[in-house]
Length: 344
Image 1 (tube, one colour):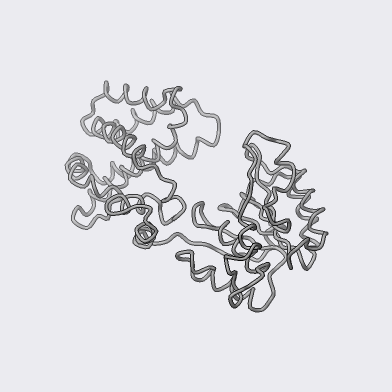
Image 2: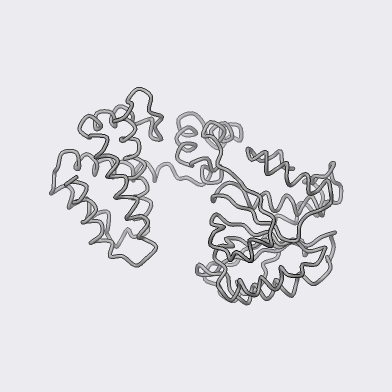
């Protein structure tokens, strides 16, 4: 039932109306950042359409159909052959296509084209989720277009994406869009507390770090975050004191090849800290900080930084993070970043 999910009341209203009117489109584009529950909503729609004992227009969440629809045995990320076809749930009318190595394979799109022509095996309708639809290759996009031109009345394609602009305009034009928005941090915090996932300061910090994304709040490892945050705070302290030797050591540690998987997360932590610092330079008493538990230490740091300098730091970190999509030399880029920040 949709009421199990917090927020996005507008999206719930749209999906309920589709069920009430029995007019679920052949293709739906579910748009929103990662961690907002797009996949959960998509599966809930599939459950409602195939439930054996519906409650109104929504799923009962108890019948065999509802229970099996959400059960997937996902293949390992390096199994290319498994990603060439639809990954079925335990219910033979609900399947999913996932990207392999940052691309949805054309073979999977062709499997979709074939399967959407068949009538439901055991339910009333077939649902096919395309996870990370923005990763459709040119070939798989063209294969999907053929499917979208003539979707059977009992088949429904649900494209999930955080970047709809990456899809071909011809694909977007054939889909009805449902948008999902981030939630206020207070709602995410209340959700974490009510579901007994986190409590107190832990819930507050996780909710603020999640950026309104409940799924992200649940996945956060706060111990790892605090460890990375302490390292990045020391880096900021070195910047505010213009300690070049400490900065070079920090740059070497940040770009250490042995910790390459931590590089992007630590840059994100650094950006969050700088944003808090910038807010404190503008309005110390009114600043709503992500790292509110570090308010006293950050306030002390902010007395050594002008607002424009903090703003320039933010811009430089954002610029480097945007360059990570291409093959940059991280060691050289990190040295340049920290030395330019020190010179600001």
